[in-house]
Image (cartoon, rainbow, N blue to C red; front, side):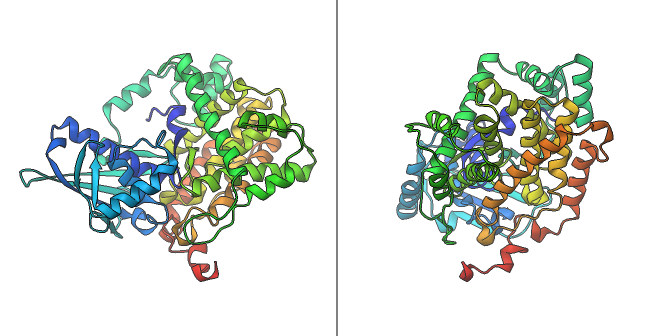
Length: 474
C-alpha cells in the first residue's frame, strides 16, 4: 500500500503533460542525484536519453525532449523562469553542448542524444532510459517509468520498504473508499479532517498551510494568466486561445490589478445559469491553455486535466460562497487529493495506461468530492459525488491530435468541471444508502476498462480523433 500525500497528488510544474513532461523532467533530476550518490557524476563525459512507448509516440507533441533536457540541466520545474526555457533549448541545439546538472559542460547533440524508440517496455508505457559514458569508457544505465501525475518509479522500487513504513505511520491508512468511510465513522470526522491528520504525521501544520497556499496561488495565477492572454497556442495546430475572449465578455466593471482582486471582481458579476457555465468553462480553458503553452500549472492529478479542480474551486469561491477563504481552499484540496490517491492506488491516473478516463475522469471525481464537502455533504455523499463523476467518464479515450495536449484535451477540462458540479448536486440531493454503484466499484471498473482498452486509445495518437482528424484540416 502506498503513502500518498496531498502534495504528491497536487504538484506545481510545467506543462503540457505530467506523464510526458513533468515525469521525464523529474526522472532526469533523480538520475543526476543518483549519479552523485554513486560518486560517478564527475566522471560523466556523455549522456544519451532513450524515450520508449508512449513517450516516443507523442513525446514531441508533449515536449518530452524539452522537459528531459531541462531536467539534465538541473532546472527545477517549480521555479524555473518559463520565459527562459525556449532560449535555453535553442542555445543547446545550436552549440551542441549542455551544462549537465548545472555544473559540468559536456557535448550534447539534440538529434543524436535524445532517441525516440517506439517499442514498449513491459512494466509501463512511459519508460525513460538514461545512459552515461564515463571517463574510463565504461557506462552506467538507469531506467525510470513516468506512471502519471508526475510520479516516477523504478520497477524494482515500486514497493520500496521505506514507502510501506511511511504508509504504516499514517494514523488513518487508506487504500479504498470503504476504509476512508470507516475512519470517518469511527472518529466522527469529515474526510478533510481525516486527511489532515494523516498529513500532520508527515509535516507541521504551518508547512501544510504554506504548501497548500502556494498550490492555490499557482492555480489562481494560472487562471488569471490564461484569461488575460490572447493569440494562438504553439505546436502547429493553430488552436486559438478562447479564454481571453470569453473573459472579455463575462467580466464586469470592477477594476483589479492582481489575481486576488480579479477573484473579488468576478463576485460582482451576473450569475445567471448561462453565465455560470461560461465562467466555469472559462476558468478550465484558461488553465489548460497555459498548460499547452508550457506554462506553470498545478498537476491535479495530471497536467492534461489540470483545469478541472481550479475551475470547480473557483466556481465555489465566486458563485456559491462569496465569503470563502483559504480554509475552504484547504478543505477542498485535502478531500480532492484523497479521492485522487484512491484512484491511483486502485486503478491509474495515467492516460498512457488508462485513457483519458484516468485523467479527466479522476480530476472530475476529485473536484466533485471537494465541492460536495464544502457544500455540507456527508462523507458518504462526498464519495457518491466522486462515483457519479467518474461513472460518466468511463471509457473516455486519450487521442490527442498531433500528440499535443490541445484538441480535444482543453475542452475536456471544461466538460469535466461541469460534470463535477452536476455530480455534486446529484449527490447532495440523494441518499447514499440508495446508491446502486459504490465508489470502490467504479474505481475497480475504471481499472478493468483501462486494461481492456485498445492501446491506440492510450495516449499514443494512433486512434480516435488523433487519426480521424488530419493536421491539414487544422
